[in-house]
Length: 126
Image (cartoon, one colour):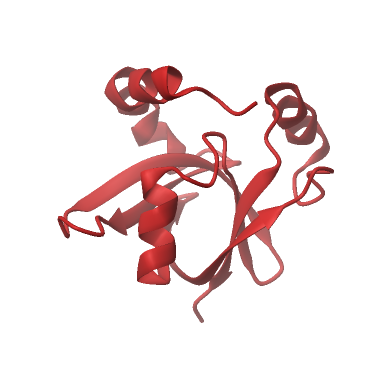
């Protein structure tokens, strides 16, 4: 069970506008900057993002079919605004991990409660 489409719509309209400015600086949060597959428009999507040795892993709280995920996969990358920096990321790939092993322990428990088992792994561009 990932978060519902109703929650996603509410977050897009209300919550993301409030948390967006903070998500670029707080640990465990970031903003994915991506382009629409059809419109070419630039979008900014707040996410839970964590560093890995070679890049990043993003918890897919709305599942792997979210528009922003499909945009990043189609473009073969995106930019990630996190901790006050903008980093280019490439080679996006979907990862199904029921143990949530790429997440910190506290986050792992929260994601377990809401049933998140899918993640987007990205490599950092040097």
